[in-house]
Length: 346
Image (cartoon, rainbow, N blue to C red; front, side):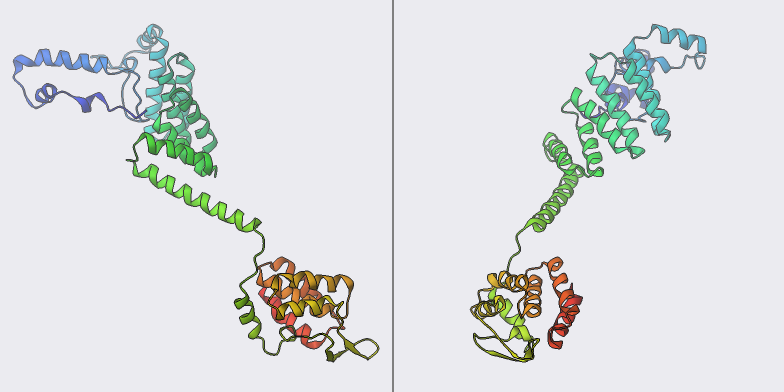
């Protein structure tokens, strides 16, 4: 729940008139009523740490501070809730002074002293301790204490928002978004800070989802027009030229020095045929057949397969093919040169 304002800021008009100089005849009665209102308003309201309120157990006597003996007797007569409030108020002073460890100790004492049925007060103590942990950047402790506060007061906006900020620091963005969304709804979308955090977390979650989707997506072949344009830029490249059925390969010789003739069983030949038909989805599989069988055109098939791996964005698979071509002593100079030219792109 939202923090209530100090009693002084809710002063009735007659009290304000008293401060600026009402007739003396009204003074005595006004002072009495004012002190009474302060006494009645010094309950267990939800105040920010360090707000500077004073509990009845800490009030000074007209002669000065109470003696240790008097304070001890007063503590003995206080109810457990009053003692818890006094510990909380002491913690608020430490918080305001930047002594967060001391503040945490006081809030912990308040939690221990507070009766369990006083859920509203307990939720405030937990939320205050979470605020001190937040200053120490102990995000896990912030989440734990805010969760205790929210369990006791599900509409506790401060605890929800503080937990959302801590969850964002812990990169637990989904739960953070749940909390900050609840805050936005409870505040009727009037708080700019909560809306900015919600927008930030939504963008982070969107990037994560897009990254995962891209990582697990199936490789997609570019458009035929793009592939044709790509290969047309390599006018003298060996894999960009069509290789027809039965055509002699003038440059390459087999191990016996005879001219190698392409046959229908060659996966590389089929891959080249599919290229002419613009049936690009089957190129990689046909090149893989040539490579697995160790055919005459293994080097060319590796180079063509690596090129299509590049086109679909699979650099991890392309690099081993290029390295293998570069290391093949029986591959033509032109094929190895083409592999070297593509290798830096990976």
